[in-house]
Length: 349
Image 1 (cartoon, one colour):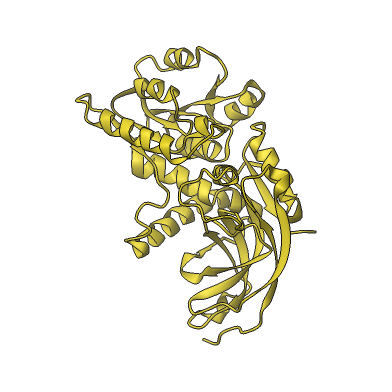
Image 2 (cartoon, rainbow, N blue to C red):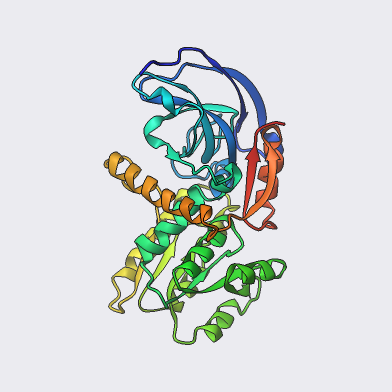
């Protein structure tokens, strides 16, 4: 296995500090040749997740110090390989979850983190279900373990994770109630969920009308005071799965305090003798101490999701495709809370 020694010119979008979206700036630099076990990916598609929105405010747990290049995941083509990496990987497309660094025309990643993308799946479509698809799949099948014939509630059914979760649940024979703004109700209904207006002050009462005996799981990315109502919706034997604190995104102060308060509340609920479960979904659980297991599980689950996309069972919801130099516009659009699906960033024309 021969290594590639040439350097690569990369265009990167940098988050310099706590700024508005238009405070992002673009730089060009030479990437070093990939080290042992690494490859250089040419970005074919990346995107905007809720994590980048939190990072912009300095409120994402364990984010690197400013300045840094954001970008949680991507689909790219291998253009260079380091020592110990099969050169035959070059020219092939892979998905990778990076946490940061993907808002770039080229970047260095560990070869062990690559997941093959089927030839029949477009890069933007694969990107839209990379971290979102793994999150939805694991929450549904590994965390909540909802069985066929069950009923779930998906808060934010129009979002990147939410729209994927709705489709995976329907494919598994599960009834879905999804919250969204009225402008997205037709789309949510088409995905297979019964829509409920998330701005309705009686939203939880509307959900109870649709599921008077309670539900088998609630997937809540909002947190905040509404989490108690989500817990009340869950019937005996069911689960509340929280995977974010969107309700506190714009509040001043540390992003850790709401998370710690949330953890404490979920732990207390788990001690109650009512047969219900509550937990916080952590995408990176096990990464630090069981890296090989984490990578194998991620690859297995993402491969399952990509197969469903290839088979036409799962339709990735792409809100917009915006060129890399306009990443500020992509971030602003994602933060507008007006989109259906995921905002995808593509290479400069």
